Length: 266
Length: 266
Image (cartoon, one colour):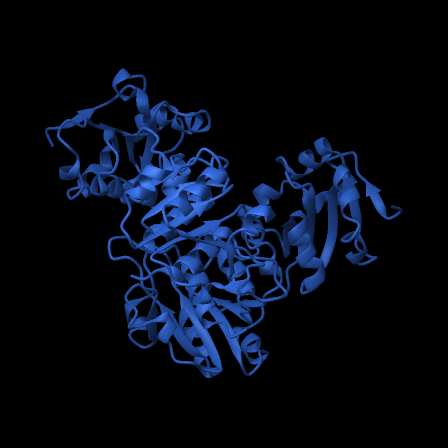
């Protein structure tokens, strides 16, 4: 393919954005995110919610990407490297052989996101979700069960973290989200936008299957360790997923799957 | 506490079973497994399904284990070490400061396990689940939704792997399981024991909520990548979890949570 740009030097300045991506995940990356693997790249390109800046492919993966390559906008450079060069660029072994750099958008206020949603809407609201695997898995479930958006409090971890995007199989690049300035701001924003908030807790007052229907529903999930603050719970409708009495608890991502399955009206 | 045995040398032969546990996970460990952390140790001791051989604690964790220590049988040695010694023994940083070695039992034939179950029983059957995170998460969901047992085909990974036990928050040490000699053996054993098998697939013939009730039900889950073999699916009742049309799929562990939630009669 004519547009492929061959890279043979890991220090080539044209692929600087791909360099040492593991380390830079930990310290932030100046308005960009990393998408890995065929499935995630497909979501990035087909959802087209975020701008793709560059693509880096292992040379022996190019042949299998006949359907994806035409989806890459003409102005986006597509670099190709052999395995040693690619691993040298990234700083570790890139198993999937497919990387893309996307541009993070400006932060959108929660109120703006919520006001853009349809009259019938399902939103996932996250408070203190600090584990990137859980973050990715919750987004995957949100996308699978047709949630219109995700809102987060500022103590939740960054959905644009590389591993969260990978675990979400691209859902983070598809489902719109916004981070509130505080937990109160998130709850207040949801209420102001007419959302009935269902706070999921092992001690919820009703089973999730009995939750009252509402045109706009937000499922609120708290941190695995501490759950939702008691004073907040006391002001909200709380729901539970019944489980065996002799076992501890569900993982928060598993709980999100069950709850969203029950709330989805698709 | 009088029974605590102080260890100050990582090469002390008394704690040989704890040495280099990360490496030995990859090559097998001669009839033993590793339980990590307070929650998992609690399940190991309270379920008492498997014999505990030894416990190794970080010295500054001992004070917080007043409830757990009396559950450890008198003949089980409880070793205590400082952080440097403990990390030196294990070969990496033991964040939780609590380790135990358990004894793996002799393999139980699937038919024996199934015949030991009550007349009304829910079983999870796994074919080709090769990821230890998924294995642990599926067991956690199985325990949470009251499954009586798990059966596995021989291509599924080992539930006794350290990380699988950790992710299961101990469910692997609580819920009985057995590995079949082949997928056909597993399916045949379930049928012979009177189980109605529901094969979960994105292309299932009916929604999971509409699955016919049966005193003995087995939920069959296939590998994430390839799913269940087509010839097997054609012989079984297949069920699906409805999801949004424009998104790829659920993770197999998330799917197990939703399906078991629907099948549980607790």
